[in-house]
Length: 82
Image (cartoon, rainbow, N blue to C red):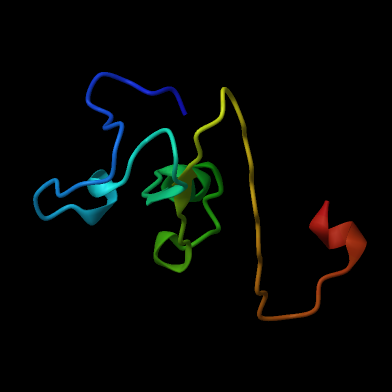
């Protein structure tokens, strides 16, 4: 996560948004993501309401992470999953 101009260097009150109260360079900050919605748009068989996503802003130069959990209503063979 790059530290941008609106990022804060120390913890402190920032209105009603508690995430914004955390110091950007020192904390892992929970945040929202549009990734779950994007996955639903790419897979027409998926119900968007069943997809949930979250993000974490981590103070490092560059990082990508994906944790995918699928709970299926039936058994799926390897051939069906491809």
